[in-house]
Structures are given as C-alpha cells and as structure tokens.
Length: 336
Image 1 (cartoon, rainbow, N blue to C red):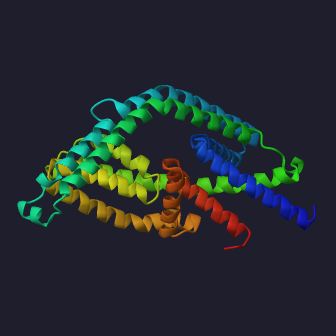
Image 2: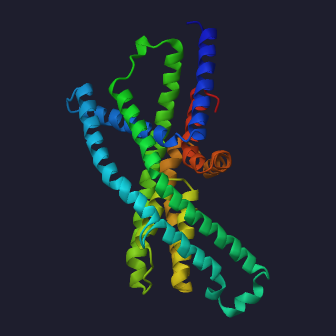
C-alpha cells in the first residue's frame, strides 16, 4: 500500500477510534471498556511471564483466563450483593457518611470559637444551607447507585469476557486488512495508556490508603479521638484515589468534616496530617505516574475539568486514560 493510501487509512482509523471513545462515554459503556482492557492486559502480561518459565502462550492464556473467570464469578456473586448493601444500608454505609457530613456543615459555626463569628459573612446560614442540601442530595444519589450496581457489574462482566476472548484468540497481523491493522494499532496504544495509568494509579491509591488508614485507625485513637465511619473513609479514600488530583481533594474533605464532627482539634490534626502526607506523596506520584504519561499536574487537571464538564463522573474516570492515549498518538507521529 502506497503512502497516500496509508495516510487515508490512518485518518479513517483515527476518526473511528475517536467516535468509539466518545460513544463509550455517551452510552454508559465505560465499565465494559475498562473491564475488557483490564482482563486483556492481565492475560497478555501474565502469559508473557509464564512463557519465560517455559509455558506455551496458548496454555498460559487459558490457565490465566480460567483462573480469573473462577475468581470473578465467586467474587461478584458474593461481593456484588455486599457492595450494593454497603452503599445504601448499615451504620457504615456511604449514605450515613454523607448525612454525617451534611450535619457537620449545617452546624458548622458551633465548632468555631465565638470571636470568629464576627468575621463571618452575614449570610453564612445560606452558605451552610446550600452545602447541606447538596450533601443530602448526593446521599440520595448513592442510594440509587446501590440499586443500579447490578447493571454496572453486568457491563463490567461483559467487557471482561470480550477482553478475555480477544486475548485468547487475537487476529494474526498478517491476515488483517489495512483498516483493521490501523485500528489494531489504535487499540494497542489505548491498552498501553490504560496499563500505565491504571496500574500506576492503583499503586498510588494503595499507598495513600495505607497511610490514611494508619492515621485514622491508629494515630487518632492514640491521641484520644475515636472517629466514626473509619472503615468507610478508608474505602472511600482508596476508590476516589484512583482519580488523579481530584481524588485527594474528595477524600481530604470527607476526613476533615468527619473529624470536625468529633472535635475542632481533631479536624486540625487531620488537616495537618493530610497536608504533610500528600506533600510527601508528590515525590512518589511524580516518579510513578508523571514519568509514565509524560504529563504535568496541570495537564491532567485540565483534562479532568474538560471531561467532567462534557461527560460527568465517567469523564473524570476516563480523562487520564484518554489523555495519555492522545499524547501517545501525537508522540508516535512525532507531533509533540
């Protein structure tokens, strides 16, 4: 195929890839995409490691897929129900956490010294009421999430099945038509971007969750402050920590408000600890994820803002992956 035809095929593949990525967000298929990419990357990576010790690729992939399938069936059968209940029911649920935060906001001035009141705006009650209503509205939203979790898990499972099938029986490069070959290159770059972002962010979130858990479960009780909803805050810290930058903001806000409900000094200690920990994490984050996607913090933040405005929460989750993929495509063409 000559250069001109090759350029036309590449352009067509870029257009189709862009349409597909936007459609994934608009149709609510992001869980399926992420599930498929996750299983594909795990199987391919695991098969390569098994091949190093003499296991044939097809056998290695079959072993991995069988093991993953058995684990997922068992995990989702039990874990799916527990997760839905955890979101909307019980004393440690996310609904209780949001309502506790709302109560802190509506009575916030009672935690401040008397002399501070004269410096507050006269309409502080309106600010409190607005924040209170927002928190209560989102607590009801989490109840809806609990009821809709089955659909989310279904999309995730279907995506995992597709990803496993593609990993087990990939098309031979020599048998691909020009457009199919170009599209496979787009998918390969997307998969690499996913692997770098997700696995790097998993390590970052795990580190942040471990340090936060030590603070909430060990340090604060030692100092005489027994915080409520500790398990829930640790779980929230891990999952929102999968979102770069904004995840830390969300988890810090939750921990600060819950600490404030116990005592003003507890909130101050929590804020100081979180600031210190996140300053130390900047060095780790720069090493783990900054070098992986060759992007500065302001680039990721801008991508998050744009994708959130366009697609909401799904856009926030997809933004780092999409942005890393875009940079890889531009870098491959030596445009950046």
